[in-house]
Image 1 (tube, helix red, strand yellow):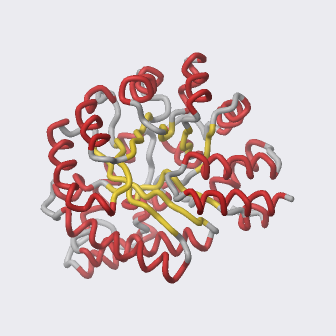
Image 2 (cartoon, rainbow, N blue to C red; image 1 turned 45 degrees about the horizontal axis):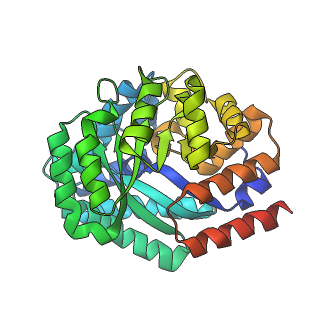
Length: 334
């Protein structure tokens, strides 16, 4: 995909990025060799050819399988630094990075191992590349709520390194209400709140309502099914709650990119932004997602700039950085 000069230059904020989803096949082989793990595929090309997702469930199978090579703090450091270098090259200035501690602690990797590696990469990237980032700890919704609560308590010694919590993995049969007590405790501990409400999942609009009205999240990840509930759309607008859409990943797990819904929701005043989700699996980082919106949506640069402003507005970046980025976006567009 050819990235336009405007998109390349546009200052970007990434708010929906799973660090485990940036594990490129080449790094998977490097880490497997380091850790003495034999992989079922013989090459990076074979790994990519095996990615044939038709829905969220089929994607998650490959996603969790890929994590098996992540064993040490050095592995998590290498993973995060590789993503941050790629993001900096696409002019991402701030990234809210999801990580899934339960996907690692459930297989014997300690919480400290995960977060210490990620933290070291964050600090190095800020110093050397000028990209700032924050960690968002996600709970796996297909595990018990009690496990999520235990993970929340385990995170407390590292609270200064974690800006907020999220909820991801298989949403079917796992509504937001299941985790209401966990989110209430997270809020009490000072964490900011977001939550996945995936595209075209059964009861998706009701899940968005629970997340917004019952749990009180600050934004929704994915969430374009809110269009099914016009009154809830108005609630998002009134409260300034944003959606973190991921067009390329949508094409893999649903019936299309949802770019048309992004345009409609932005037109109604919802703060929708564009992100890359799990780019190593879906084949596109944030600039590629912007380009898909530009090409498929037939939108002009002013619309793309608005998407970037929306990301700044709904981010948890420091206020000074947000003001700086808004000024840069305005200057570029002029």
